Every structure is written in structure tokens, then in C-alpha cells.
Image 1 (cartoon, rainbow, N blue to C red):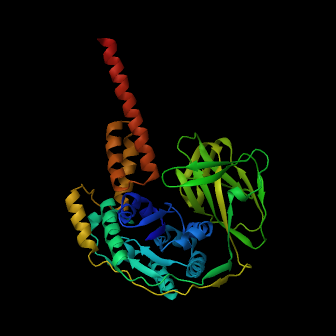
Image 2: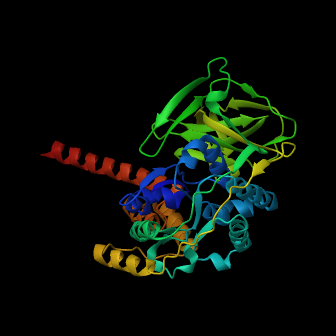
Image 3: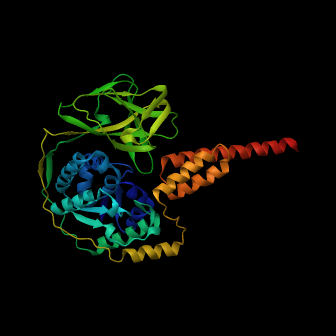
Amino acid sequence: MKIVVIGTSNSVMGGNGFIKALMLDHEVIQLSSGRVPFFYHIKTIENNKALIESSDLLLIDHYINDVNFYSEALGEEYNQLCEDFYYLLSSINTRIINVLFPIRDLKKRDTITYYEQIKKSSRLYSLCVLDLNETPFSRHHFSDNIHITHDASYALGIVLGKELLDSDIGQKPQQGYCRNMPFKVINIEDLPLKNNNAIKTFSNSLMRLKYLDVKDTFLLQNSSTAKLLSVGYLRVKNKEGHSGIMINGHKFSLSGYGYFHETIDIDLFGDLEVSPVLSNDLTLSNLMGRGLAKGVFSYCYLTEFFLYDKNSPFQIQSASRTPFIISLPKLIDVVDRICSIKGSFQFPALEEKTINLLREMAIKNEGDNLKVAFDLMNLANLARPKGPVIKSKLEEYRFKLNKEIESESELKKSTI
């Protein structure tokens, strides 16, 4: 079976987990990206429509980021746009499974209504839902509140792969189409080049994409009713300085390392004047309030813009779709067996406040005892392996400790 996956961090991590296991029995095409809203999924579907419809199955994974952050941060408008997303999904001429990865504290979250909404929308358009919140995962099966471990993910891939071989998932949907939609994707390679701006290529094991190395201001012309929802960008580790963007006079820092598709939380309509933020001394808020960036701003790499025009209505026909159900009753048994066989140590699941305290204690001790600071930050990293501040500080401490060891070694040599 040919399977296309458009997911978020559980699916990216799935490269060593469920996707790796799915590849034992199926051809899998990975189009996932980590910290993204469902706008990324729409953009990816639009850019890969022929590939997706040539597949036997589209597997999507989007709700975790929404429940964990975007739905609460952006409110009702975001939730309404999600309804449009599911309407668009209904027009795709292939089978679809909406995978809901488990959230450890789901019932305690105010955004549980969003979770219920997307299950309802899936049923409305006859999309299969694989709700892993219904699987009794234990605490040691999670690496944090919203990610299962690599072992648990691999077990999911084994069981799901076999189930897809054995289950009747019906005929492939037909006669769906989308001739027009209010969502608009502007890929960076479609922009007319001006001044010193240049299109370049980035590639790694997960993706290959075009990006614009923005050196000068350019104008993106749009309808006055078109609203900018999100922007795609690239940040690279070997590039000195921060990355920043100015849109219609509003400045933002671009956070993280790698490719991101991030939402814009202010209203920007119509034409967009876009410039790089270049400065030797500046403090800027990251997009969506994800912390602050201080210091040198030296570059801006952009990949796409994503807009919504309420005056550009849908022209869609939902595909003729046969509902099917995927059930994995033996999943937890396989998860326990694989975790037991591998015998890998599972770091205890800590409360978010505990992890924050470890991080703060490490920073407080970095001036007095760097080794203690490193140990504390290492514990925080085990509990929150994707935390950007923790990862950055850990690298800083490791570099300084190595320098101290080198200095002590040189001192010993000079005294011999």
C-alpha cells in the first residue's frame, strides 16, 4: 500500500518509530514537519495534490499541536478555519485516516472541546479516526505529555501496518474536486525576484525545499480581503545571528532551528510589504510569543505565505467515500512487549513545573558550579528533550566544560 503521511512532531519522530515500522509492509512517503498548525497541512496538500491522490491512503496527524497551543492562542477563528480544513479533506480522492496521538492530560485541558470538534468533523465527512487516547498507554510510554516514546511509536507502526493489510478499507474515493477555496498558498519560487533577493535550495533527510534569501524589501500583492494566516521559514544552525522578518511595519523574530510554518497572531490584510530584519543590537519577540531573541539579526529565509480570503468561496465536491474503521485492540500488548524486549530506560514523567524548576536552578548555578548546572540541565533535557532553551544551554555548558578540560590538560603538560 502506498501511504502519504502529513503529520507533526509525533510523525517526524515516527521516522524512527511508527513510520519506520510501517515501511516493513508498505511504501511510505513522509511529508511531515514538527511544530506546525493545520495550515501547514493545507499548504502541503495543495502543493502535493497529485501525489496524494495517487496514493492508497493519506494519514494525517495535526490535532496535538492545536490542542496543546494553537487553539487556545488563536481562539474561535482558528477553530472555524479548522472546519474549512475538513471540508477540503472531504474532496480528496484517496482514503484518509486521522490519527489522534494520545495526550496524557487531555481531559484536564480547556481545549478538549477542540478535540471533540475534530472527531465530529471527521465523522461528518466519513473520515476514519484512529483515536489513540482510547488506548491505555502508561506513563512510561510517554516521553512527555504529548509525545509517545520511539518504542511505543514503533509498536504502533507494526500493529497499524498489519491491520491495513488485513482490514477492508473499501474502494478508493472518487469524484471529489476543489476548483476554488478561500485558502491561498504563495510559494516563494512563484514570486518575481527583485534586487538582491535570491532563491536557494535546502535539503536534509526529511525534506527538500526552496527558500528565498531575503536581502531587500519586496511587495506581495493580494486582495484587500485576504488575511495573512501564516508564514513558512527556515533557520539554520551554522548561520550566525538571529533571523527576523518585518511585514507591513511589524517586526518578528523567527525561532527554532530547521523548517517551520508558523501562524501570525495579528491582523494583516491585503498587500504585504516584506523586509528582512537586520541589526547588530535588537530585542524582538518571536512569532506567537515564543520567547525573545536578543542580539544580532543577520538573515531571513522564507519558504511560503499562507492566506485566507473570505470573499473567495469554496467550489468543492466531496468525494464519494466509503466509511471504514481501523481498530487496534492488541496495540498496548505489542507496546509492552517491545518496550520490555528493548529494556530501555524510561526517564520518569515529570510535571512541567518541575522541569522549569530544574532549568532555572541550572541557570542560577552556571556561574558558581558549571558541572552542577550541567547535571541539572541534563535532567531537564531528559524530561523535556525538545525544549529549545534547555538544548541551547546544555550545548553551551558542554562546550565550556570541554574547554575547561582542555585548559587543565594544557596546564598539566606545562608543569611536567
